[in-house]
Image (cartoon, rainbow, N blue to C red; front, side, top):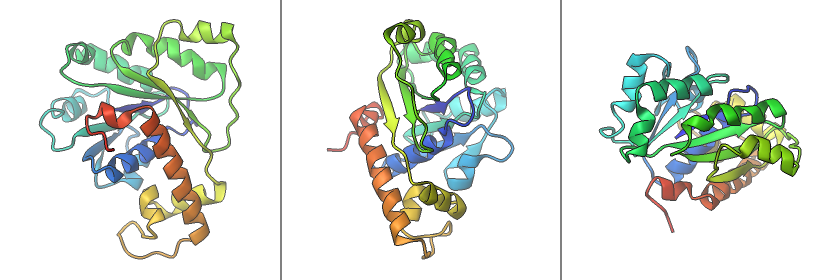
Length: 238
């Protein structure tokens, strides 16, 4: 499961963090890879399950791809750094990963986090050749109160004629103050909600802010459920 965008500032690591919480809360063993070297943001919040890698380096590609079928983790989540999505997909293509996906050896899910600009939409055409056999989801992230324009039919046709999406995921806005406090805590969203610090000790987080984060994470989980992410990892909870 790859989370990425070529445009920076669209909140892709926030999405990756929410996915890790979502899968953990559904008892799905997951490992993560952070491609923001040398000091990854995802690794800061989820250090126990996250390894920092360079997805364009063969040695790091081996750490991910060669262990997909042997790792105890059912799902591998890769948080691709800003500007790195197209190069990362190109590198995976070069080693034959997408041929293996087409052959049913792996299941590939791409969450493409887009911004409200045309520049962000132009990424769709660039990555289209790599997602023919993927479960490709377009993600609109409103966590920082971003306003998305509505695409007219001509604009939609121009950017979507070469790609078929599996669905559209909308991430709702989270209170700025609540988001800031989670950032300062350096913990997963679920740990902040549970009023614990990064070492699992009792914390003194605001009841109000924990409530905002709890409601937000539940709404994000509803979106992931709606598009069938649990079905894709083969462990749907009822």
